[in-house]
Image (cartoon, rainbow, N blue to C red):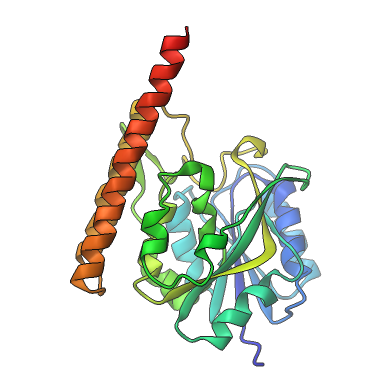
Length: 297
């Protein structure tokens, strides 16, 4: 089996300590034809010092730094211009990979040229790297149509479908879909909730593979250390109305993507119907949960 070059791109901002863990996990892969690009979004801590130290140790590590914080999408888009690999894994600075991750994810892509994004089951960890819970999607394995995203969209937060964006993707596809427009709550931008849109865009370029192996570890939102990640405002503590605003933006963008999709008219209509149904059920569920809380007081 061929071993094409894989770029592991690590966008970072003010997480010098956690950056070491992310880079170490990339270096420990049993798939050896990799390059690592650390893309610093104008950190003000010891990130530059740590990154340059790592570069001296390994020749396959590249460090770049933005002069100002551009937000995650522009930072990633700029760094993707340097990616030499045919495939790319965007590894958040607070996450890490198990040693067989890249070899596990690249196998389906090499066996099926229609696949553009390969991911796996995911472990959610704390800052120390200890597993808090696991996320698996048995009902999604082998599904090759756009409906896998829309029938179990990010509206169902408990399913953590957002983590499916973690994975190995064709670099050409990533360059085509970044940057994505941020969602907005009032006048502030947030990238929370944009994951379904990224997945939806990927599906216009090919299929998505989901391995039953646990090869990816991410740090849960309540466990993040230090900065608010590599963005200007990656996440927000939003009110009920703020969450509704994000959901409505998701609905509009995903429905819009259906209208310009290359899929058949029947599939586009069916997918949009499922999406609207999912959204309406979410609203009723949220209203019911709030009413239950209020009535119990």
